[in-house]
Length: 244
Image 1 (cartoon, rainbow, N blue to C red):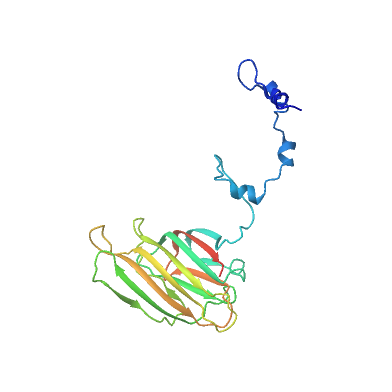
Image 2: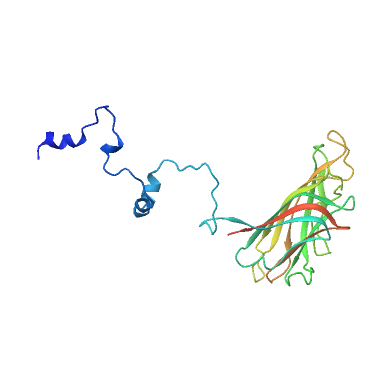
């Protein structure tokens, strides 16, 4: 077959445009899309994949390091707990993030307790240190407290109960699911409007930070947060599992 004869197949219409009639099969159908395989190579060679709508996904993404396990919104409750249904061997490390937390009673400390029997007892000894830093004074900082004989971590102190005060913070829980005498502990940060704070340019706002060790050879499977006195007026508490 000659070249001229082959080219005659692609002769445009009299208008100079390629029209539907010039295309043998122009319909895009589901069957044709399903029949065409899009492999890893094709996706890798694509510059960008974009969407104008929401994309939902159910399942586990390989390589995900941190997973949200639970979010609890507190409203005038005695405490917030994360039980053994959440603290499992799936994760060795955990993170708690809390925001807009207020006590019912003014000038309170927020405590964290650990349990090895899913909350029947919170009697694990701890070693700890808590530091304070006044956000308005470079010189006002130091050690707030050290080892506590009441089996709890002191996350902060003197939290105000008005809507302009309260506390936000994070707690990193380390090696909770070790089932031997290996180190288990926590480190934490908390930024607080304390009860004596009287405004942006006067009074006190504090950053508290600390760390400690939980003294147990058993696996920890329950964590409780509560104020020294009175209920948790409000706050959002989220627990994340972190793969190690």
